Length: 561
Image (cartoon, rainbow, N blue to C red; front, top):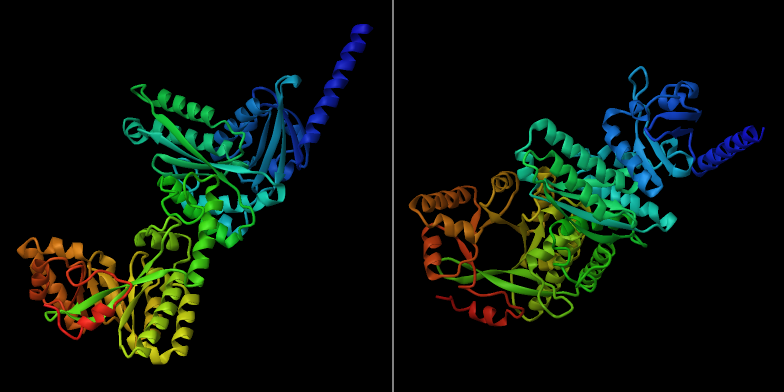
């Protein structure tokens, strides 16, 4: 009798513990799995999610109910739960007996060694689902099932916005698989596919919501995760998996860099731009190359530091708190100054000049270059007015990114600025730069036509360095093209190259477009481009960018030899 009472007491205790464990999780379906992941208990509305009633689930291997692409992920998540005691929400889908896929399902649960090493799992429809527009735009790396770079940035942004409600902090890890490409080349296709799928499953399983990991390059991976994820153990598991798959048994070396990713009070739109920029800089190991007040030294939180730089940059731009330098463009062969190109100058907190290309790259990647371009227009028109008051008629070309031409707000603001300053526009020119490729050429052409209605001449920068330039030349109404100095130097090395350059100049002249040669630094280059028919030249031979043009402008009355 005592044995019977003890057995019954133990049974009741187990039942109590089982339902206590199930109370920790929530969902439409509650499952208990044994150590082999076989279902031993099921309760809830399972028909809609699994296509089976609860009593039909007992004895089934849990993996057999999952869609194939989610099986590696769930296997890894359960292994994580075995070590950590629980697993966070992950998105999965199941296959019904009629082979129809279930809707997206959120899965979470606990592992309790005191109850026979069993897992207690909850399934619920549409928990942690991304907004519909984000979900539709998601793209994945086929081999690993991980998000691509832009998709990862979108999902990270959504997770960071969501974390504000819970106060949870997240970290972002960049993982590099050194010697991974050579390993893949010496593996058979099927083994390579299995290895890539395993790497993807490992990273997804440890990421926030089980799907905030991405493949950023052939051997680089990024993952947003909770601070308690043991990155060292994950590195070792991937390294062991790669060594086992390597025909030579050599494997790879896995290295990681970790930074904080939190959102604080960053507006969602700015956060989205900052996350993408942060991921790219982190991958390039240049995350601190662009420095304002918060992008200096070792960043404690890359997203917040990036946003601080964005805020600082925007404030300086909007208040015109930057400098400008003016470089002359001269007519050939006389070398008489025709106009100046105005160049933006920003300085970091130590007073050192920030390289212009680095600055423009930052502005474009965080979608703020249109604000800089508009600020430069405002400053330049103000400067033109100052020169007119001094009795000087100075023509100045201001740079406008191709990215800005695709921004209707920028274009409308520019036109409003022109409307208010018609009397100064005779001295204003626009130089279109191709640091960002123009994708909507028809739209850009319409805006350029509107600009030209104000009498503003247009120059196309860096012409001849890419096939897209010829597409621009045929679609956009421009007055000048500027040929890159490196292209000129390479072309002038041979007779064939010189003939090509003369043909290019002749093509431009045939459609009433004048040609400027950039980076002309020697008398030899000046002579070569003059013979090739160039109309204008720019470079240190004729003058460096200067904040004060008074010397240049006085000298302009006397042709430079």
